[in-house]
Length: 269
Image 1: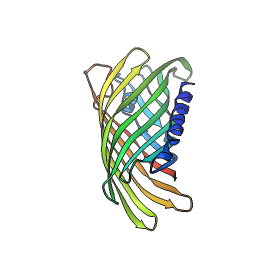
Image 2 (image 1 turned 30 degrees about the vertical axis):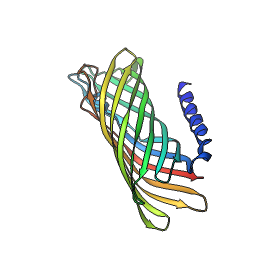
Image 3 (image 1 turned 90 degrees about the vertical axis):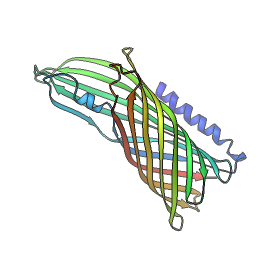
Image 4 (image 1 turned 60 degrees about the horizontal axis):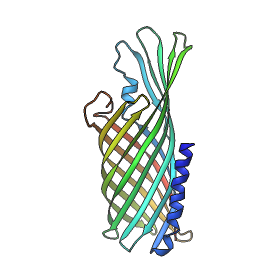
């Protein structure tokens, strides 16, 4: 229920913002779909716990779909505000066999979100600068399953956690025409964020997170449809640094990777 409220609240906010577009120079509203592979900072911890005598260690998480709305508002010919919010669900399975021959399995479900609010300055027809805020995170539910030597389930315990990070970013982008309404789009930005990992067992870890967010794609504008299309690849990398050196900061010194194919369609009016 909370997840549904979050999604609908964001969509309602974007619709209300779109109602103001008529007072600005131009605007666009559309949708973004991102088929992405996630290599979380904690995957090695799940695969290789600090326990002696384990074997058969593994961690598996398939790519999944992230999707959501995007909105842009042209303030002037050179200044633009835009926002994008993506949501998706991921599942993972990891585990190992302990020294007694019993298996430990972790089955996790992650509801993940990734959003940006950006102010862009058009330096020329081919180059632009931008800055803004990024907010992302996930809610996690993990089942800890203990199996016997013949794979029968001996016990199952569930745990919940919430991770979120937010902070500013600055970047530069390029829009290089190829032929007609087709162009190559590339942008890269650098972010510095604060992150908190809240565990159900009252274990909290705080991090400073530094990273990059980059996109390379092929853009096409359909004059007949008044719509801009984009097909490309998007890559994110974040490095986690613990703030106080506590034992709860399991992601300290680890990198979080998020990458895949992205498609968008934006109607301009």
